[in-house]
Amino acid sequence: EYYERVRQALEIMDEAVRVIQDRRETVEGRVRISAVSFFGKHLVLPLLRRFREQHAGVQIEIAFDDRERSPLAAGFDLAIDRTPAHEQSVSSRRLCSLTLAVVASPAYLRKHGTPKYPQDLPQHDGILVVLADGVVDKWRFASVRRERGSATAGKVIDVQPRPALTIIEQHDAVLNAALQGHGVACLSVDSAAPYLRDGQLRLLLPGWRVEAATRSQPVLYLHYVQRRYEPR
Image 1: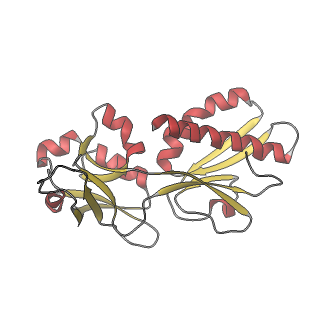
Image 2: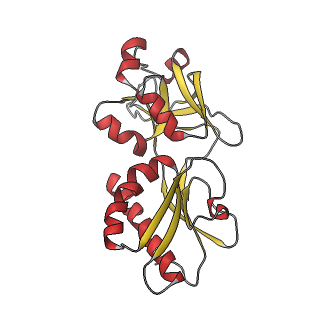
Image 3: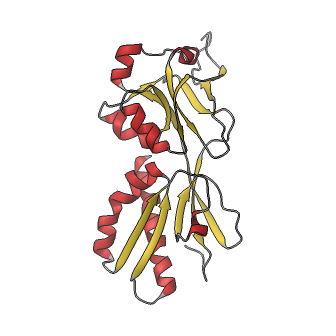
């Protein structure tokens, strides 16, 4: 799954080249990119050095932004965000669906214990995020256990930890707060994966699939202004 995300990030950089080529014959000039924080910082940003070695005449301007808005209207050439574009002059390409996971730092778990079931979460400090519409989602858990006779098989539960810390429109800050031990957080697997691998975060409730209770499963889109041709 990680390599699929890298492939998608490379496609974005190819699109950046096409943006410039549409303006002039040589690959020179500035490209402005807006990206949701975790995807931009962890997947796009690491590719920029190699990209600039191949295209020395290109200047990249990149903004990391988790707000729900229209980055292309703000003058960006490319945008990676969670909402499809509705402007007629903008094309959107679906990049991927995001798988969610509930995590906490080892320090938090040593002090407060490890939740074994979703029903334990209201007794834990939560790191929650509020988006532009002001809604704080509950987390929906569906049991992935298939064994006959399992007490949790097929169960779906909507639950939320205590709102110990609520962060407005900054998913990257939720990750940082989890690393600092503020509580339990619901993050995309992509953003949490490096910290799960090195032990800075622990995966919780592995027998349950988690998603937002009041929203559809999060999706990332690549937006770009329509040009004379569509990307291959």
